[in-house]
Length: 65
Picture 1 (tube, rainbow, N blue to C red):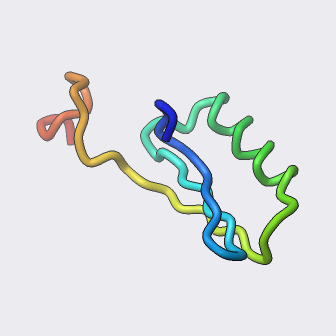
Picture 2 (picture 1 turned 45 degrees about the vertical axis):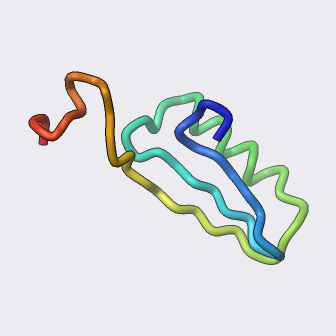
């Protein structure tokens, strides 16, 4: 993941975009737009939104929901 909470990978002819639902900031949106515009491989693009399982942050622990 190269230190980010969002990333892309390819499996055969499918381009997967993994997005972080907790951090949909301008940087992630710009990355997503770039990934979608520069897609030149694969027949399919699938976007998945995930929520990290664990966090060390005080506002994102089990008590904050």
